[in-house]
Length: 393
Ligand code: GLA
Image 1 (cartoon, rainbow, N blue to C red):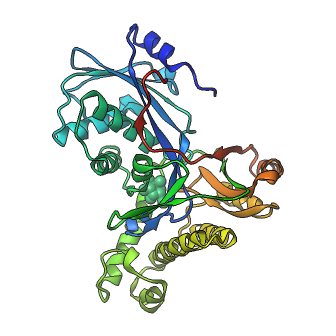
Image 2 (image 1 turned 120 degrees about the vertical axis):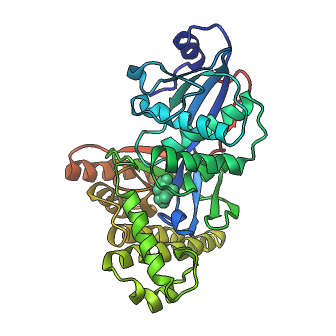
Image 3 (image 1 turned 120 degrees about the horizontal axis):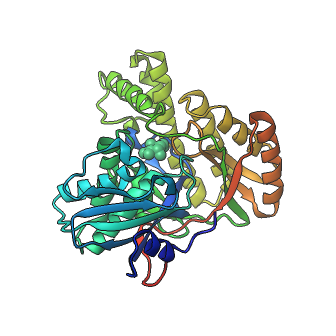
């Protein structure tokens, strides 16, 4: 869908001649380090140039009016600034509502209502974090419209809290962090236990990152995400009987092999194995990238996928088919699922000159096996959540 003229849409939806302010928050990909964030491990995500736009203006009263160009059929969703409780009927608008609610509850004075128009060009439910993107775009628009002195980390943490407590998905901090602090051309290594992070330039020579959308929709809330998290927590509790650790992120591969018998349940043991090995893999992957060894980085991406398939069991036939087809193509350095899994997107590092060949071959294998087509995008790594320059819509 080509981006509509957002100013025209805003003025017509809200029937106003005013010029609103304009904001953007990206989506994200995760290069490696999957299902490690809530296990106190490392992740290596990057913000992308697809994301959520929001045009917003304050009102004179206490009304909040939300409209999304992605869900025009739901029309304007309206509520009062004093009544921000989760409401199923408010559907997608619960994400911005949750953010407004938690920012206000954290003591940030939000004195009036607002009209806000959203438009996202991240495919929904594709595992590229459209929900964290809408939370963070709401965060930055509140910061600007009400001149709030809010630390970016606090905004990120409030976004995660919306997801955890307001929406009810026990997700980690990776998505809001990548979206809140993303930088053009850079991925970031984040230690999810200490929240220490470093940027790392993504220079892929003559390669690009291709996002391959399986078009199998997934929603975090409806998925087995919370179950995986609980399984890892149980494994941690079992290990703590003998090990003095705070999270699975504290455990090395060797230590895991030595103490894994403490984990009572075989499935939980498998889940924990993924979390531990994936954490170490992520650190090794970054070292390889620093050395300029792209081949080794790609190999670790492949191993990450296999571990998510066999030990964590969050891939499914669609992601496995698309990733396996990607592995078989010439010019592919590495490929894996990205995000929570259970459908959604995979990423592949592909030689520029072979991208067209890659897309058509992968799509052919995918459509023949799954029965419908995949969609491909070239990922560009962009900046994090921000206000757009005046006059840019
Ligand atoms: C989702 C969650 C993240 C993270 C990933 C898996 O995107 O929101 O916190 O757990 O899944 O790595």
